[in-house]
Image 1 (cartoon, rainbow, N blue to C red):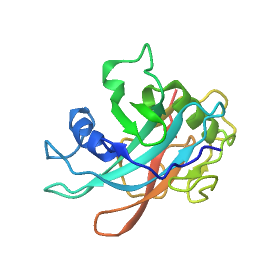
Image 2 (cartoon, helix red, strand yellow):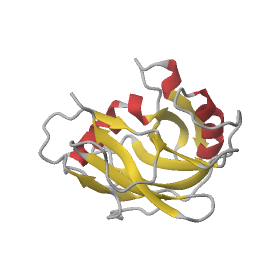
Image 3 (tube, rainbow, N blue to C red):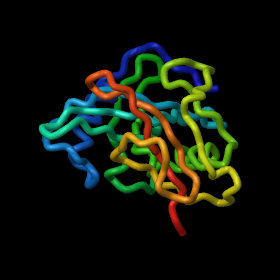
Length: 192
């Protein structure tokens, strides 16, 4: 099981995301420089212990309404090769582990392999902030019987309990900036 270190990161994950989010095609905010807040999420373990895997849910207020985003993150001790330039969210100095290359997890093969394992029931979601602590609030529905899964991450989250897909889906919770709790579909098996 991966350990959650109580240390500093410079720049912080939220500082990196504030710069990265508005550059994404799926960004739904109206601010050029959002001020995202950590609203929820969970972790997955890399069986090889090399890649930190976090599914962070961030929220920020817009002029219209708050928006929540699912951002899978892969934390690595070295740069990934053969990924598009936009895959790198940034680098950060970790107080225990040194320089970390932080990638958008949809481009990280280890992150996506573990997400597929979770969807098949072969991995256990872990608490975002506690070491060695499963998170039973993260639930998978209907995907366990699927073979080779093509999984899609829902970037802009909607507060809803059920997916509108007959295939499998992953539900997790977050808290809006006003303190209201919400749950929604973070990932789903893509239709073939």
